[in-house]
Image: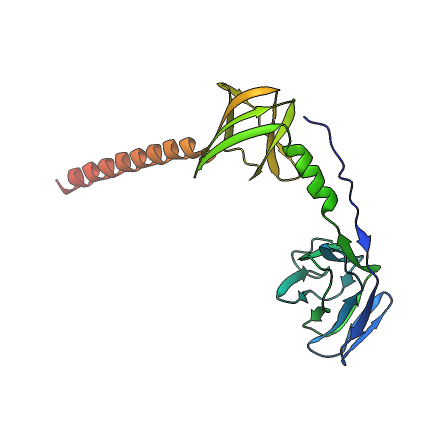
Length: 247
């Protein structure tokens, strides 16, 4: 496999003030919702361009709840399941993306709890992730490689020239149904960036073909044919037996 690369992030914690609704008590480490439709608004103080996030650490409650986080027209739902839920995942850290904001925060962030109850947490942060560094890194990776791409539902044809050995990453979720052929030779596809797939390429010009076929499709078709033949054989056998019995 390939070595692991750790991204260098320049995230910043943003100072904020929290204003609870009338039926909500908000204190350090505890949110008490005393009536339906409770919650609080967060007002951040930042004009930094970037992606913004709400980060809960150590969030917990005896109640399962679908918590709504809204900023402008953007709305996200935190599906929290308590220890009493049949599908309890034992997850207590959550990162909720509010989207990219060119001019920073321009209004309050609303966090809405539909059910009354108490919710504890270790920390609640408003985070800004500037993207200048990532954009610069992407532009550097683009330099030195030229390519053309033709794409259909289950096939990608790529012609490229690279000035160096590289790891070629595809923004396609990894699946065992994908097969890669580079210059006529099959190349193993492996996972990268958590869920996508990639392959190594050497310096120079290459022709790459990626094709997809549903895993176990041929085996499933063979099994279907065998099952159909077995059914027909049993049907003819029973029909013949019934005729003999009638005689």
